[in-house]
Amino acid sequence: MSDLTADINACAALVQRGDADRFMAIMASPVAARAKLFPLFAFNIEVSRAPWVTQESMIAEMRLQWWRDALEEIRDGGQVRRHEVVTPLAAVLTPEMADSLDALVEARRWDIYKDPFEDEAAFRAYLDKTTGNLLVAGCQMLGNADEAAVRDIAFAHALVRWFQAIPELENQGRRPLVDGRVEAVQALAQEALARRQAVRSSQISKEARAALYCTWQDAALLKQVIADPILVADGALGLSEFRRKSSLLAMSTFNRL
Image 1 (cartoon, rainbow, N blue to C red):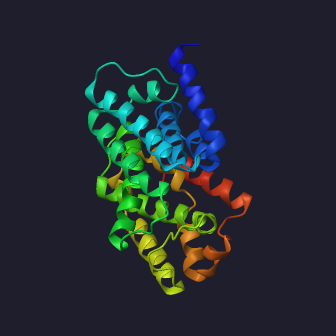
Image 2: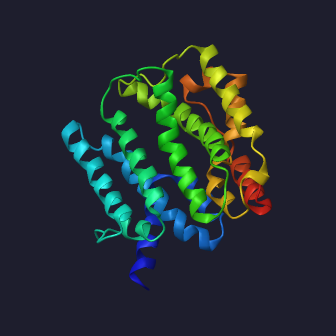
């Protein structure tokens, strides 16, 4: 087994432990796509958890800066540090992708502190830079895709995952929404669903769609929020195991969004 293969396997194990749904989605993608997607999503797990593994803000800042430094090495094309995630990630990122992921890391600084979002624009920018930049990079690794269309799908995906995280964020003393009224939550879900449904398959190549298999539950979950926004506060969003697996199978089999 080559060192790179071992690294990719380590990335896969990291995703399996840290994000079971995305692991399932990547495993449903073509084998060649997995070698690119596992390092990308392993990177995302490492970055997203960095602010939460310590109560010391300075240490959390240092952890995020480590990833920014690694991305700078990848972007500059020189010597890149040896690391089981960074090394395979360097093999699939362009300088432009590295810059985009650097913005993702920078956005994660919000997670370190307990300050609320300044306004609705700041909240949307956070969702776009974290999930939007991630999925755009994934699509670009695999094929051609209209970036605006990917960001529309990513907005829906980010919002679903944010809704699912709200009870825990509130337990941590965070204020996750600028406007937490039931009507506002419902309106966000309606907007996200409309943006997702407006995307045409022709806007994203067949190859690139595998990077979006991780969004397979979003439409159904957004419909749940629209029908009953209280599910968000109750932490009750979710599909049955049968529906989860069957809908992912349908998406990957027919390669549709």
